[in-house]
Length: 350
Image (tube, rainbow, N blue to C red; front, top):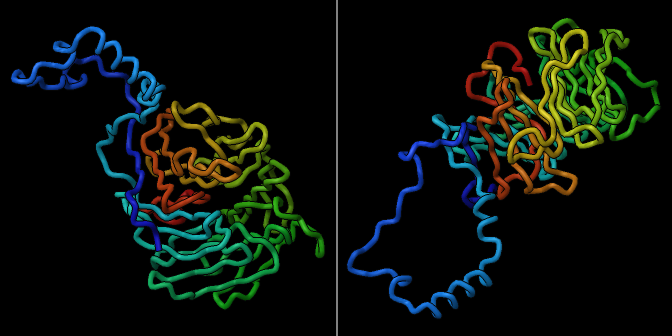
């Protein structure tokens, strides 16, 4: 059961400081019948009170300066689904930031909300589909670690087996109907070999090789047709309609960033670790490119960073922050996010 404590949800837009007096701080009203203490107290007493306040509240001005910006958003937040890898749960969250639905999902790094409303997600060593009334209608289990899944147009399910190095098509009965081996039989790729992976409309596969710090595109026979260097460790990659590739990287050297390259591999857009005012990117895990061109990024707070930043950050193409979400009482580390406001036709860019 999720916490009933108030959620910490931030909705704000960056804008230049307002210089109009109409937007300045409102003066405190004075009561004429009660003259101020400063006017009545002797000088010695005023000096004593000032000294006591300075001792009792050191750093008060610094704390005020660190307050988050006031909300200037003109719309509610997003409705979204997300995976909490550390806590082992998946959630559906309302635009007001309240958890509407949750389900246990150990080591979940990838999830989808299907057209039926069911949720498809990985479970550490498997992939499961669950209805909103929490009935399991698909369940594939493996000896390999699994961090990638996707429902295919033919009704089968794509599964990326990390340590086994296999890309699989699995039918509704959980039987393997297609296998592409990226590693020879018996070779263990280890925990860092693969993170999220995607089947592409051209029949190719986009695979994040986290440990090798590269995203590779494979053809249907498993042959490499393209490599995109991704320092910091790629966690998620999405092929965009214009043939660009959007990639989220972890916290290795040069990482904690989200970047986009064109069809030639040339970088065309990037949000780096300390580029957003007041927000430090910790480990960029999941992402969702929205129809309006904005990017919603999951800021994974593992590796000693729990509670040290927002879970989700939305930026526009100019890299201005337009929305953030944090609920450190209910969630620990969001590793994947899928915005549910207006699902686009076909697979969302997630």
